[in-house]
Amino acid sequence: MAINPHFAAVFFCTPVLTLPGIFAKLIIVNTYTELELSYFESRGRVIAGIDEAGRGPLAGPVIAAAVIFDHGTVIGGIADSKKLSPSKRERLSIVVKEKALCWAVGEATVREIDEMNILEASRLAMKRAAVALAHKPDFCLVDGWSLPGWDFPHEGVIKGDRKCFTIAAASIIAKHYRDEIMIRLDNEFPQYGFARHKGYPTLLHREAIRKYGPCPIHRMTFKLL
Image (cartoon, rainbow, N blue to C red; front, side):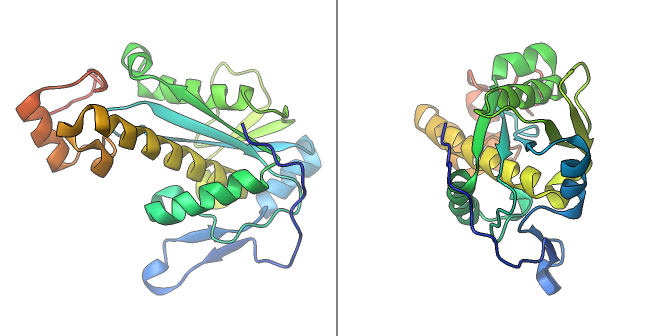
């Protein structure tokens, strides 16, 4: 786990920016938003953002990331990872890890997904990411709904990757981390094209399943064809 003890420089920056025109749906969150700052005042000084990647694919694990920043951290271009190109996610993932006070990832395996369902597996990965943080947060902000049965102080934020700097940053780490896993798995199962579609249900992927059958990393409880 990478931990950066140095505090990021603070400069003027608009916390949330919605780009016009063809980028109208890309919401940039460069630093802590008013929503996050309200939690600092009421829930504690160490706030972690948590998000997951990989609920929709037919193959591979689901990955969650948790991240904590020092107050005043600014990173240009942070947004919902699904709205960013792979190259931008890779670049921002490096910057986020460098500027974070700490970050961690959690994984739920294909076997766990099939045993407990993808929703519960996603929640498990999120909890694992939070527990793995080098610094214990006072409070966690989780993308989507809160996590049932988790007694750690936290709250779900619907579309949190568009509203919270920490959640959006976590989404970038989780998405890039999972993409790298699927690229490595492509070397083991090259006939499925995992490096291209990352396990998502594309026409290419379904045609490969039809031709070769499922492999050990396919989620057998999903509708593969």
